[in-house]
Length: 132
Image (cartoon, rainbow, N blue to C red):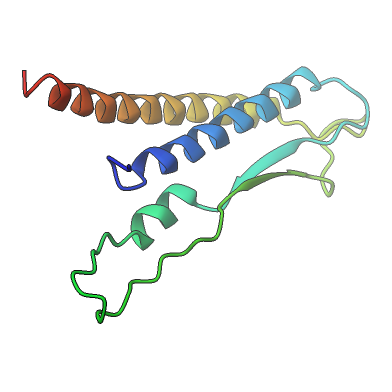
């Protein structure tokens, strides 16, 4: 049974992305002085936006009705290495200011996702309690 029409799954995928991005940024920061280290980044295929824009909740009330096609493709993210830049004399390309900015943005993004999931579960809890 799906109480929220896929919203929880979309938010879960987004949290997975934010977690992986945080790990990747932290790894970049930890290797800021490592010779020849190349910064990595996580790219996300706009899971949340795609899910929200392509989800049409339609019910067939008759077997003769044309079914709505939902995109069953699994959305994901991947880590890529930035090989074509060098910021330091030792071959390292980690820009600490950029990484710190990305880390702060990602933390805000993660917290907003957690708040949204908490709101969904709070709504469910209110229904279970009978509206109180």
